[in-house]
Length: 137
Image (cartoon, rainbow, N blue to C red; front, side, top):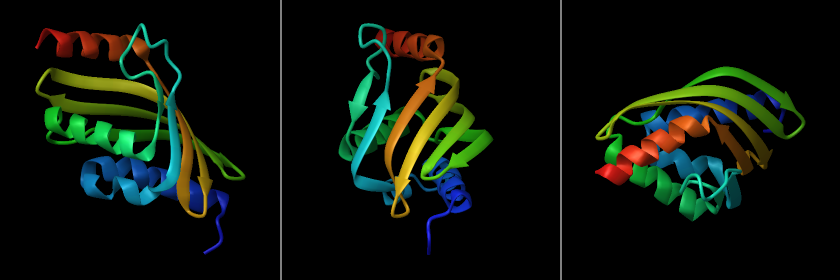
């Protein structure tokens, strides 16, 4: 099937929903050469930096340990141009550390029906508060 802007938006939405419905399928949406970047100051959060596919899958597995019901994404807006999809989303989860929620802007780049690059921008105050709770545990 040819990659279209609509099919790219559908793939992104399915990827985000798979993190809750079937976390074992997350890797199916990602290319082997994936780069997932969280452009934060590493002094502020341990989640800063660029991850490979293996590192991202490991991070999702770690989240599953403290968020047994999954991280639920609600997609608010999707915009596609060529192979790029911009996504505004919110998340929520029940975790061993208490409730978790955040707001995001993702920029996904797709190739051959897979995500090969992503930049994740989220509310760093939520991340810092959650990391502080985790450090106290």
